[in-house]
Length: 427
Ligand code: SAJ
Image 1: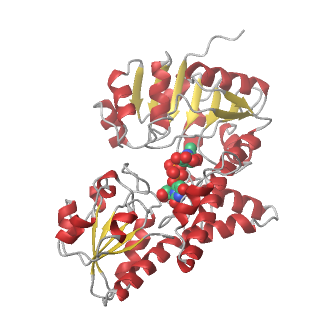
Image 2: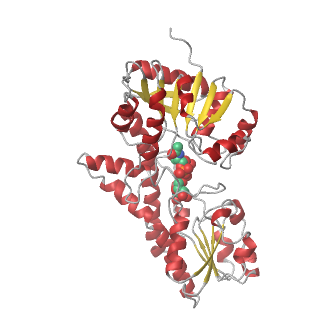
Image 3: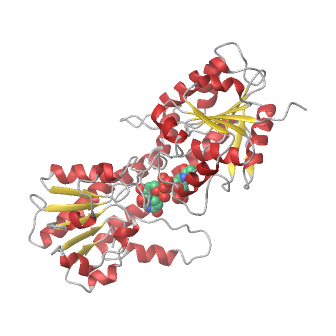
């Protein structure tokens, strides 16, 4: 029986790495959190977190046996090293493996026999073996013999009050049985949810891109329905809610002004590009991406049409864009459709004012009142609680006549009974 594993190093202290590091500390591991961002390390050392998450903040405040550093040398003291760095896509939607490569090169000099390296970052099937493994072996250590390599795709869901790093089931693949056992020993020591062992690294990599592509195509399905039902005078949300009464074989998704975030609009491209490089073209996944990517323009068209119906034009109108974050009640704005919507509006000479209570950085005014003042129309792009409570009376107080509800988050009936012009996405 090898010595019990006791020290873990987490590389990348963002939405994925920081919760994992803090949970490991709570479960008795000695933890070293490493990040290349010295400002982030300073923040953590001062007991602050670089994003909004009450649970993670509370874990940090109670954390013992954890240190934060920029120095990769600490890898030498760890039994388990987990890479949790971002995997964005380039402008042309090809996967950007830069951070994964940089992290792998950062740890390689400090690896020694017996350690297990676990990649949590989302990558297309094959990357662990063809990109990460050679970098870890650069100094002569052999994966599957001296060191071990596993892949456990992250499943963090920012802002989810029910599911967190501790209680979400995981899948795990590795280079070999020893590596699988070592990695499973780590996860089974910190999680309350099951760990499913996959047949290979590739299978584990494929699970993540498949589960997020599944979500993207289902959102594309309802987004296309929304465009169709807009012409048919059918409320697509009511129809989806009706279909959701079927207790089996239906999973409701809802249309909106676009698909943002660091997972759903990104992960399908990992599979599309990998398959393409191996001679297969994912027509369906590509079409779903196209449908979802067209939704910001569709939302702007809805606004333009609603203004026209009220003898106004987009050109010269003052539009209040409510929301920058990619989903409700969080401050994450990565890949948010709001940015494309704002660009479309400005390209059509609208005067745009932006407000998001969670994203002051991209808000052009500090309060909702400032955003509504002198606005001719409102376009809701994020279903923050503060916006869901907006009533026709509030808009009438600001003499706003046109509301486009990009997240179908308002009570439509209230608006139909008012004198305001309300348009949803598909309703
Ligand atoms: N969206 C829709 N319609 C829907 C659901 C989402 O338009 O029915 C939009 C959202 O507005 C947002 C984007 O899609 O702009 C992504 O939303 P999301 O709810 O999928 O949020 P994410 O990106 O945080 O997705 C995460 C994912 N988790 C991981 O990758 C580990 C995803 O797998 C989860 O299914 C999702 O959370 C979840 O269920 O909340």
